[in-house]
Length: 267
Picture 1 (cartoon, rainbow, N blue to C red):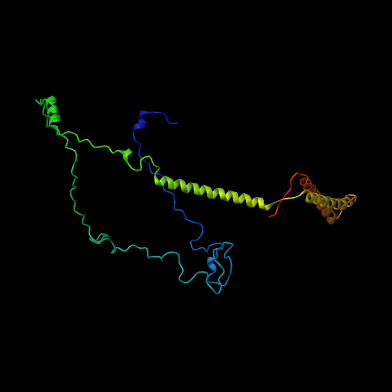
Picture 2: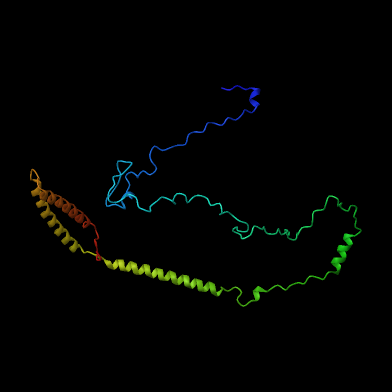
């Protein structure tokens, strides 16, 4: 750890660090790319080439490099030309002359100028005007105010009457309400037409038919339940189907026990 010392205030001489040697790759610059398909476009070999990463490929009837293929411009073409440099009056603007500087024109100021430091205000100004007398004279000589006749609103013909536009709006609103009311009434009548009240005789006939159907399904279901082992898919499905039918029949019989039974004709 460096301790504090007055000698540290003296700037030390800069010693540049030693320059490292230039990096040189261990592989040649003209090495064919490994696992590449770019080397095969001039040959009859398909797929990937040079998987082992060999420095030199096996020569065949076709070269792996095109005759005029290269990456970038040819060597020597990047050498600068000493005759090609920017000459006078050959810039992009056509001339190296700067435009003339035009003096800036300030817009006219609305506010008065700020007084200078050597301009002193005028002091001691007094007025001998009598404002009381002047005000009295101005009021005496002024013309009287003209009284505007007020409009007699109560004497108009349509005073106290409902405006025509309000009457039209009320009529349109009432007609819309009437149309909506008629639509609801017609919908209710249509719904009533779709329903049909069954008589007690019809309900009794339906009950007897459902009970007979329940007895036949139950008989078939009881024949399946006494089997010790239901080892086939057909018997299993038949048993499940009988259970569903029995449950549905019991629900239908329960619905028919109500006082009034309606039938929807649309279903």
